[in-house]
Length: 110
Length: 111
Image (cartoon, rainbow over all chains, first blue to last red; front, top):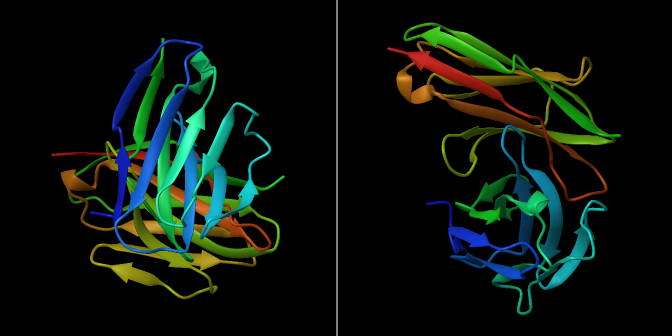
């Protein structure tokens, strides 16, 4: 148990649909990250929150991606108009110097 | 551009062998290097290294950082089948919150 719960664990969606993932830290953590991991690659940084403020966002993140952390606790990541290239594992992490990852949401776009 | 390179990409050994995994980095204003183990799910944190030459150990795993030569190694002694996983390293630059991950080394330990 890493202290991070992610839902859903798996999501299959048709191309063009919108999807939303949720990340719930079990205890309060100031720092929350979203990463994306494709097969054979290491996790790739998407965005970072400190409390409710989104302080950093990857330039790789297109306008179709948006993330929120409205009360500084749980966070959501939304992908609009999904494309097949969005198929990946989406990982949420919490922590300070080291990040502790949740189990991830595996997205398949068909 | 910041990057982290791991070698070898994959490795097959027999139980009881000792392995060394390599991680070299080019990270702006380097702050720390992290090692993770990933089985079929999320990466699990192993070590964080910030100072050169100081070894971190946990059981049969140990890791060390060389900030002059910009690399880190992870050793696993007396390997077991349960050590089979992808081992990831990540560099953290100052002035940013992101971790830059390598592609990982896939280790398979045969019984």
